[in-house]
Length: 399
Image 1 (cartoon, rainbow, N blue to C red):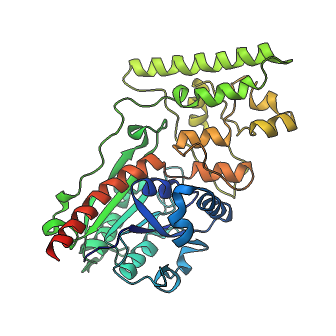
Image 2: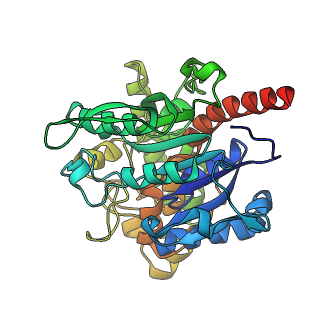
Image 3: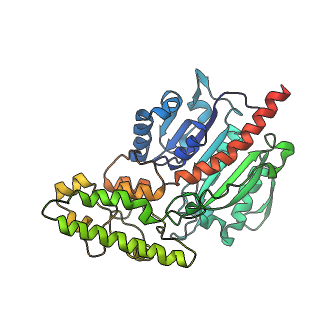
């Protein structure tokens, strides 16, 4: 299994607003296709690809698919240059498959949940035969109750046995991959000011690994010795929101409100730092279309935000809309502190400051809340890229 093309190419399913795509792009992958079912998230991807100079390759080559991944047929739909993509040509197949089947906040139905897309991901692995596979999910997938299901996924990839739903043992020959690691990464270890553990599976084809050895792959190490706090991450943007009211009728109120937020967030950070922690945000949640407007999570999350001087009861309008709708009392001057804007929630997730989100406020926030933090995706992408580059160098020497 050799790879001699200049670019390292990837396909990502369930791409969302681009959190994983941003990280993998920064790691050096070029996206041949991005598949996303949500219309606003798909438009977010399109708008950013069209407008960003550093995504010029994707603008020319990326097949942006708005639709159900179950209907995605990459060897029929996706082109590589002037011809269709062939089996075995892809460097990386990645995806953040839906988390509700395994989320602690849900019913944890696992394989019985109709939203479970692990089987579809595995079908695409068989169809595309990529050199590497990366799958992201919530930490719940690693719970003991899903051990049989994890065995099924590993057996499907690298061969082995697993216990089926009826209790019988099933043997699978596998697809020729080595599951190099399946573990948790904490976003705060990579400069993301948020408590966001994610379960990451990395599998690499045995022909790519040196002598098929899993230890050629190195799990990402933390890039930040000290966590980035919420006050550090939001200081500049929060100041700008209040500065819009300086030297006007609400000047003193705005200055006092900003100082109050900054003091409270700083004190909370120092309090937690003294205990060996940091004043990082609780996990952002995007919610679902079945439930009302956006907020910053369940009661426990709202309480944590309140200790950081932020109201978690909703999401603030952007500054321009805030003035137009005169929503300052709710968005900036509430008794529990300011609400976050979508832009600030994106900062908490580690998105680039200039990333564009499509749709109304709630649609935008859901895209942000459901995202995989780009810095974490970049770290995993780089760890995979190291193996692929080493294999490509060996192939070049052998040829």
